[in-house]
Image (cartoon, rainbow, N blue to C red):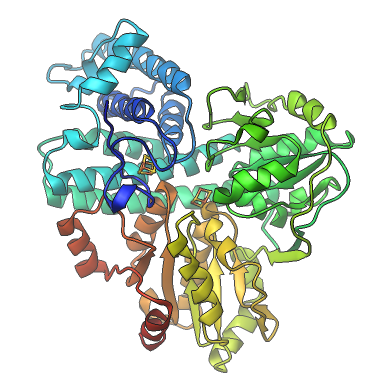
Length: 552
Ligand code: SF4
Ligand code: SF3
């Protein structure tokens, strides 16, 4: 049995995983994920027809969102869950087909993705593993069309993740969901040219900006604007739960339910920025952040001693030593892990089992001590605008470096630590996402009281960095965002970075450098378009790159 996946930065040989994923995805799981995407595309083909007549099917938007989210790298490794969701998708598809038929919609010429039928789980698995002519990345033969279809699909996965977080807080935008259907259906359409798909890629970036704005509104209206915060990285002596991933609503439910139980809560990886929100500061048992970025979880979870809750990616297949204390919820899953079901009718999720589990376990072992600082979301930075502008005008700050994005296990990524260390002292790093763990404990000092690493939050908060750039453009009265003294040296890993990149391109940002390697899913011709129109580049070595960025 074989597979083909090249959606993340760690893909084998920078080309594609064909036997098993570096992430731990087996071939049969990868093929089921492909079939999940294929099913979503088929549903979307019908969804576009429904949009044409203004018919709305309840539950459709949410299903497409979470289906896409589940296939993001390191989110869900549970084959049973994919089987269940594909079956649910096929039931939804059938309902939608009937509804459209009843309304007289012409349903001839539908593609296989919208019509294939299965009678059993075995049928599903068979289709996933054997229908390679239709299902999966390599079903598209033309290299450039394939590249663009995948670029769009990965952008949509990131978009879906952000849309789902917003939806969990009661914020949604039907136009975004409609675009997702249109774009998914378009990836099945053989009549579209390279040019059509490039235009659709840009439109994906436009909706990327919209979804990030929506999530920003959801987060800040619900939990307040992130503010400068010192986060404890040591531990206390109580039993504790470690919460990972990006979902703030899950965190809120957990903090409410652990109140007064004697169980502390710590964040891991991408949940660190939750400490910056005013609403979470009222919980005395919300202690601090434990550990580093996702890829260090194996050693860090072992030492944490208590239960771990995954709300989203990145989940690494666990070591035996702690596997019995890992829980998943939302889009995440792993065979054998206890999965906390979704909330019903807006009610809180029930985390009582994790809390009881924590009470039986020892307190975390300390692995670090001290504090890190963050909370530089757009509102906080705007408050400091006078100081920042003054520092730029006086020459105290020569350049900003946007170093947002992801961290990962490749050794090459030490480049980012070395790069941060070697940057001239009159530069400031703007960061978001788990990429920050490469330099957020370096103590790089400050410039007139402005820390040299400004952490805006999760990858989900990358929108803040765009808003900061746009604000500076306004203050300095510039015509073009690219005239600002800002360089972009972005580290990517999974598909949320793809939507952030497309959003930045849509906003007109040029000369973004992507590393540690360019995406394998960019064909030479598509890469050429990005280089020629947007000046996209990659990285070489610290010394040459700093020189290049400082002279630009
Ligand atoms: Fe390979 Fe990345 Fe796909 Fe996993 S997600 S199978 S590591 S390309
Ligand atoms: Fe990190 Fe997975 Fe991308 Fe959210 S947690 S940035 S890699």
